[in-house]
Image (cartoon, rainbow, N blue to C red; front, side, top):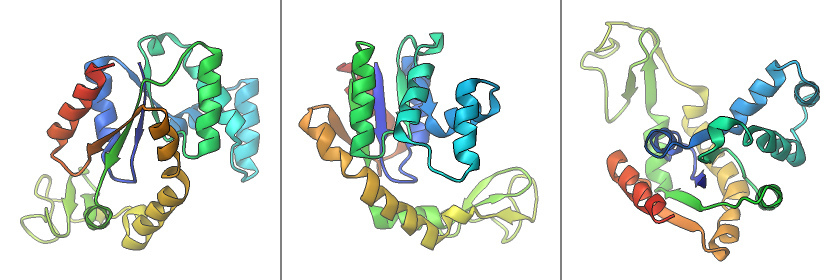
Length: 216
């Protein structure tokens, strides 16, 4: 089974991908992780990728597709895989389809985690974590019992990710709307796009995804 999870930043794609891995035996393939692995490898392909990234250029679509092509032949992908972070544009989606077709494969499902943008921005932009133990908190929904003191370890140093600041979250949504959202009609026309309420309880989202995958 070959699956793509789509949705804006913070929609829960990572959480659901991990659950799908465990229950369906699929492998989550992150293009970001694969790029890092390629640059760390001492292979001809890895050196090509590293040279592009070191020059500050974007890695071309054909290199990303080649990287995925090299990865999916490994034995852990035998049962299938989940693509995370790719495709983001219609040309990338078309290139992915062409590569899979050359291997006699095709996408089974594209699942969109649909969310309320305003609510998600509020949820993301209030997050912070304990710098000592990593416990997660939120300005409105999950504050420490004592202000400035971690409930778990008593730490007093907290961290806010730069990309979780309101202006950064809004910018990430804008990139998603501009680049990724246009691929939704592409998959809808092929009849493989399914939409799940990403604002529902995590377990409810998992249940709905399992129902969709069970029909494969």
